[in-house]
Length: 244
Image 1 (cartoon, rainbow, N blue to C red):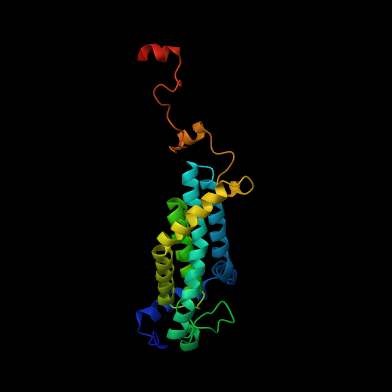
Image 2 (image 1 turned 90 degrees about the vertical axis):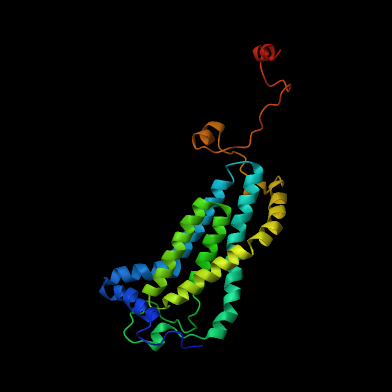
């Protein structure tokens, strides 16, 4: 199972050399930036997107909307953790060495990568977070998926993964986030709903100061304010006269 991509004529290897070759022609400072982004920067960006999404959804829509959205946000990091656990036996079964161990001339930007290569942990975790966040909010989910794709590119650029390692990570992260989402939401939604009713920690789910009606209306968002029912006394004297 170790020889998934050993031949230089393999498109997997060719694409690896093409992308990693960009590192050879780039300035040293740019390689250092890509190293930081690929190792830590994208994951930090993911955390910021998740926090921004949480801050946004707890202030918009109805309480039920906030409960559902926050449940999806909670599911995103759980999906990433589950995907990483699934990857442990996959790596041990495939046992693919890192590309720089079988191919000469690669510009490796990170030292100490001696574990197996397939599939990429970074790509798996990033895509699981992105797809899990997409379950909660499409706009923020698309942004997170874009970051996940950039993470995969960085791992190849750094010379520590084959393209198929990254593609496999994307597939694993997506499968874990989507296939387990119905069960996860079924379990998380009642729990998050109970938290929302707590006077102490309810603000984690629903802001005490949601967007104003005017502000929400300008964005085309509904706050779930119930419409007045006939005979509820919501109208003025003029309205009652017209109704009569």
